[in-house]
Image 1 (cartoon, rainbow, N blue to C red):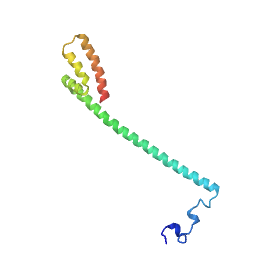
Image 2: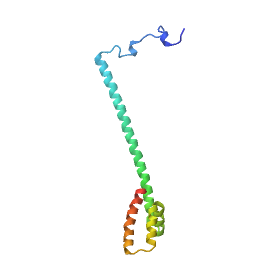
Image 3: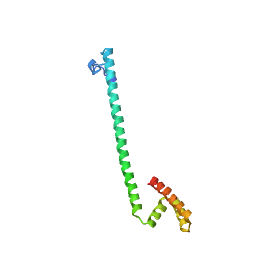
Image 4: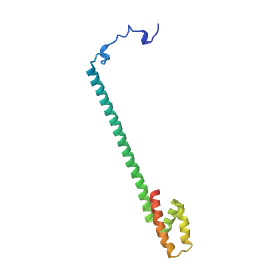
Length: 130
C-alpha cells in the first residue's frame, strides 16, 4: 500500500468550495482575474517605487560623503602654505611636478603667465579628482 495521496482518494474528498473557480460563471472568473491583475499591479508599483526611494536615499548619502571630502580638500588647500599646496598637487596630479620644475628652473614673465593658466587647469582637474 502506497502512502502517496494519489493512491488514497477515499481519505480526501473533493470540496467544491476550496476551488471557487470551478463553479464560477465566466463573469465571476473575469472579475477574479481582473482583481488578481490589479493586486499584482499594485505590488509591482510598490516594489518599483520602493526601489526608486532606496536609490534616491543612497544617492543622497553618497553625494553628502563626496562633498565632505571635496570641502575638506579645499579647506586644506586654502589653509596650506604655498609649499604645502604644491606638495599636495604633486601627490594628487603627478604632471604638476613637471610644470613646477620648469618654473623653479627659472622662467620669464611668459612662463609665469603660463603657469597661472596651468594652475587653473590643474585646479579644475583636482576638483574632478576629489
